[in-house]
Every structure is written in C-alpha cells, then in structure tokens.
Image 1 (cartoon, rainbow, N blue to C red):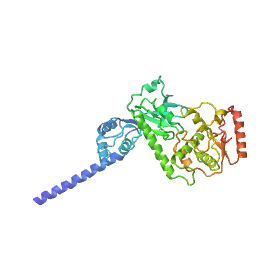
Image 2: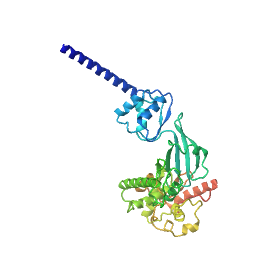
Image 3: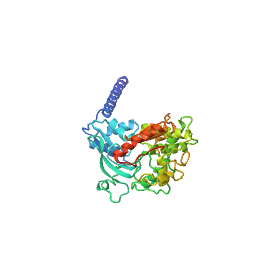
Image 4: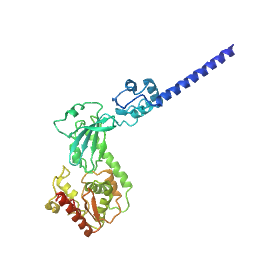
Length: 392
C-alpha cells in the first residue's frame, strides 16, 4: 500500500514539474515573442514610478499582453528596480523583453518633447521639438532666442510638462563668458554663477540636465569632461611638440578651433602654426587679436582695423612672439587632438578658398597666388573685407 501511495505521489510530482516547466516555457515565449502593438507609442515613465504602475500602463495601451508576465520577466532579468525616468518610443511589435530594455537601460529619452538650449558663438537659442512617431524623427515646434521675455505659446504649453526632456548643446569655439551668460538665461536651471571659468576649460558638446539642475553643477560637468579629454589627448600626443604643459596645447587647440570648422582641416591648420613656431615666425592669426579686443564677451561684429592689428596686446599674435597667454575659446575634442597630433606638413600659410575651407601653401609666392584667387572670389561675392587671410 505504502509503495503504491509513494508511486502515485512521485507520479504527481513529476506531472507538476512538467506542468511548471511548460508554464515557464510559455511565459518565456510570451516575454520574448513580438508584442501586440500595431503602431509605435510614446511611453512616459514618471520620476519615482513603480514597475507595477508602468506594466499596467503598458497593458492598458496594448503594448504588452500581460502585466504580470512583464513584471515576472523583469524580476527574473534582475531589472525590476532599474526603471529610468524619461520618455521612450515603443515600436510596433516590440516584445516585452525589448520594452524592458528600453525603459531600464540608459535612461536616454527616445520620444516625447525635447527642449534643446543651444549655446552658439553668435547667439544662444532654444529649439523645442517633438518626435513624430510615424517618421521616427524629431520635428521642430518652436525656436526662439534664449532669455526673451515674450515666450512663444508653444513653449508655455509644455513648460511644466514633467516629461519634457532638456538638453544643453555647447558649440565648439564659444567662450567661457558666453557659456555662463547663456546659462543664466536657462529658466529650467537654478543657482547662481558668480565667476567665469578659465577660458578653454569647458567641453563643448551635448548635456542632458534635468529640470532644477544647479548651474554650477553643469559647469562642473563641462569642466570635468574637458579635463578628461585634454588629459587623454596629452597622454597620446606626438613627439617633439613645443608644449611644456597641457595648458599650452589647449591654447593652440583654441586657435585651431577658431580658424576652421572643417574637421579634416584641423590637423593641417595645427601644422601651419607649429611650423611657424618652429621657424621663429609669429602666428599672425586674427582670432587672437579679436579676443584681445572683446575678452571673449560676445562677438566683434566687424572686421579688424589696421590700428588694431598693429596695437600691442598680449593676444595680438601679429606683434607678440609665440602663443597668447590663455586659450581664446573652448575647443572641442577634435581640435585638442589636432593640436597634439597635427598633420606632418611643410605648410606655413593658408587662406580661405571660397568653398568654406582653405587653400594651404608652403611658400609665400604660392600663398600670394592663393590670396589673389580669394580676393577675386571676394570681389565677385561683394564681400571685400571678409577675407580671413593668414600670414600677410
């Protein structure tokens, strides 16, 4: 009798195990198979939201078939506590596994409204965009100057939206004063900025502060990023460069940044100035003279006068030997790398070529021909004083 009972119990146990295995296999299949969404949706995960609330929202919107399976899968993947605040696009047919990856991986929003506070050399502006789920591309909704009193209605409608994603984009070649002045106008940031960071120490690029971020904390992030970029480039620098310190390389990088916006030219431009230093020539570059006039506080807005080119200031490289005392802007990573790993050339001169780039020359005779060609283009364009000639 007892043997029969034991045999039946063992049989029942095996049946239960098989059933559990089948249930697990079914749940796993439900978790990884394509989901029910016929079209993409934008899912907003609010700050502090629970996995239970998010899973119910997904089920109600038809993105997943079963909120319980989604939660169990998240627990099994050890991601139940990794929800990231933000707005995420869930594409058509996304599996539960793919949805979980989207809302727990990086925290980088992929849909919804996007406010990009852009700090440029000439101005700071704000671009409000919204993701078009059909084309999967952000469409501009409004654009306005930073700090304006009459904010456009498109911005006022979403200004308090907790899902609004904020970005700060700093262009290469802006000055530290321009960054500080612009950040003071960003109404989604808080805290004061009492001092301007040393020139060149802020990394251009994109940042994603949340609403209420301290302005000082954002400046600290820019400073830390630039310090890391410079340190890495300094470690990988070419041999035989005339820099005693990374700071001197940063000065050169800022000049390169202001002289060309074309990526493939940076190494050649750096080589020109390093070749001049090697031959005891003066750098003779207009952007340094301009910085000596403006101190980095805005743009000059006109051409340089001959008297300004002759006036001796610490930044007038037509008059002084060697590098100016500080950077003249905040260079990007590529300009820093160009200053520390320049092209190997014999170029000593360059001038605009009319295409947005420059014509380079090894001799003054060749340079003069390039200048003549540029002057002809200038005359045809009716911009006789916009030459940007180097080394005349």
